Image (tube, rainbow, N blue to C red):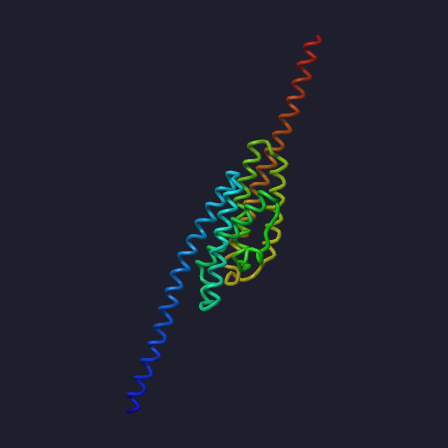
Length: 223
């Protein structure tokens, strides 16, 4: 066999091997994409259930998302570990982290550990940042229903989350744009603090007015 023929034969074998490998990876990617979409759906639905106060449904949805997260990690680490660094995987894990963090804070006043959630730290941090927006909704609900102590408690947690996030001063290539989310958190916290302060002050003023009005009414009755 000539040298040219040998080279062509070898190249064909290499091409077949590469084609087979890429086809396998493409199939794995499609499965991973489908799972990621489902994780995002489950996570967003869980957050809605949490806002409704439906603890059981919210937890069930989080657990379903957790199973898919574990499956993606197991399947990817076995043959296609680089898929775990894909943006769509990061986004789905971030949504799962956000749902888990929101659920834990609202119902237990606790923050879950990223290692327990089995998500990468950048996904966890970005999920933590985005959970602040969900906590703000609870603060506003508390203000509307007069639950000022609960609102202040949540604001304190939001403020602490920001104080932690602002220390994560690393390149966006490592943190997947955490700096931008941290800036957003700062705005949310400050806006929420202003609204909470205003409502509490107005409530105290209203109480003083009511007390004064009652005293004046009693004084008038006595005369």
